[in-house]
Image 1 (cartoon, rainbow, N blue to C red):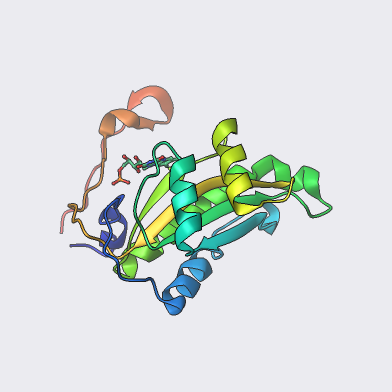
Image 2 (cartoon, protein in one colour; image 1 turned 90 degrees about the vertical axis):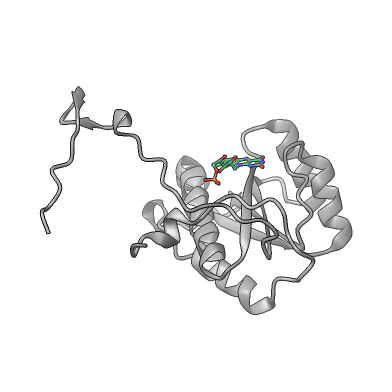
Length: 181
Ligand SMILES: Cc1cc2nc3c(=O)[nH]c(=O)nc-3n(C[C@H](O)[C@H](O)[C@H](O)COP(=O)(O)O)c2cc1C
């Protein structure tokens, strides 16, 4: 157990109990998401909170790999409606991805489970989710995050792989010299 366990214990949870996610918890998830860094602090995001039974069913129908029976979903979207659109467009995917990871980590910290279901850049999925959620033309769904109380457990882990790291130059391997204590 380390201070970073809240990161290592975040796993994709795809099975949920019927218990609802409270309004307080939803607010905390959104606060965590909106604490993320964004390019030039543009915050080019919009969050659609979905707890309507029929809407959740429609989303599941639209997403081939998003059939999770969760009491809540949050779609994190890039909102290109504001005037400085050229600036927003440049980094909205990274900005909204940072918000998404914050939201996933917050869900884990609150004892909830969550899974990121990818939407953008698959056009058929974008069109499907936009239609279900009635998104305006310049609002693009990055993903749908299903959230609920977990009905499955997964072990904490990193997927650390030294072969994925270089030292100064790409073809020189990195080896940590660990502190002795
Ligand atoms: C961009 C992105 C799209 C994803 N899309 C899906 C998806 O459509 N359905 C799903 O079940 N999981 C999806 N995942 C979750 C990954 O499958 C999962 O993060 C990966 O297998 C690692 O497992 P972990 O989250 O438990 O660490 C997605 C993750 C990312 C980052």
